[in-house]
Length: 298
Image (cartoon, rainbow, N blue to C red; front, side):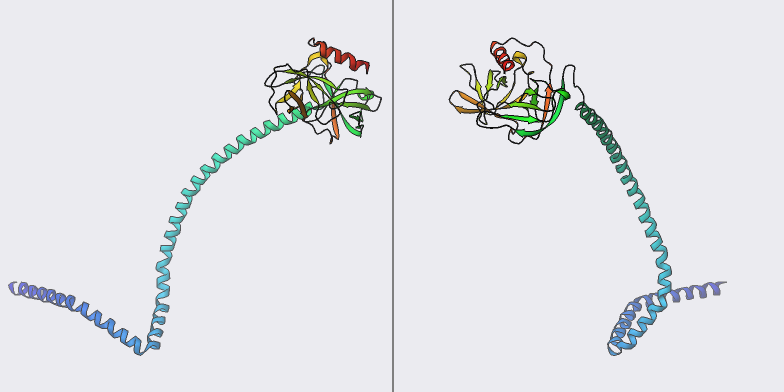
């Protein structure tokens, strides 16, 4: 037994010594082998390239077999990342969809309101108020008159005194109504007199036409100082027109003298709206009452 133990120990010691020697010289051996392969590759490049190609062809199936699981793992990881990214994007799309639904509801509401407002253009907006749309067929402008002839008359419900308006503002009133046509006196005509109010200052005046493009603001308070560009609306006095109909803007012509630039382009009117406000009574104003009586005489 002692002999066997000694022999086993000797074999173990020899094996350990051999491994230590091989580990010491293996590095040097591999360096020498690499140098030899480099020199051989320089001397015989064709042979080395052919051997390398053959080795690659031989190892290709093995490399492919090894790469497939790695590729599958990478694809799986990519799918997982895509899944989480899609979940985040899905949440964002849901939020956007909810916002779009809110916008859609708002659009539907606005469409309904727009439809209702459009329908308001085809019937009486309030008791005692109606309108008729008419097309301008002639311009009776000349040195002494400023007027229009439109295709609407008594058979359409037109009566004398109705206000003539466009989308911009007041342009005049009906002074003659036939069965099929009517004549409109523009605010720039020499015979036109309209009670108005200057917004901002609250000053009242009479808008008097003089056959020019800018009618005059008359009977202003003596201490009135108007701002150029201030809006001018009807005052509603005398029952000629209701209050707050837009007419134009203030233009300063001289010190203490003012005229008005109409909101509507009176030289380019194709369609008008004849509005019947059916006013009854009205605030007492001697000047406006006198104008109304003169208008009835005409």
